[in-house]
Length: 120
Image (cartoon, rainbow, N blue to C red):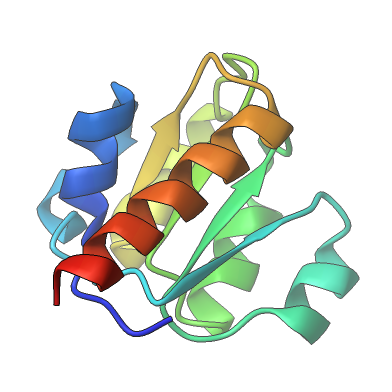
């Protein structure tokens, strides 16, 4: 997909709760990945992906920073650990929280991306 969808649009459209690094919501989302196994996420994600997970520990920030993700969305109303928020703020990786399941959130983001692409 080739689009101009940014994190701010996803936050607004899906009523996500921004927990940190709100200044980085201008990050352009180029794709996405849903998964909880860090090694799998490292092997299969790309720069600009939004990562959907239920993991809340600070290692998610290390992976997102390494892979240059657009942001991390936590599912099922999971809240990030305080040290996770501190690290994400330092790395400028936005973390958002959704009350949706991984399945539903992934589908909604994919649909937003398709809609944005069809408008170009």
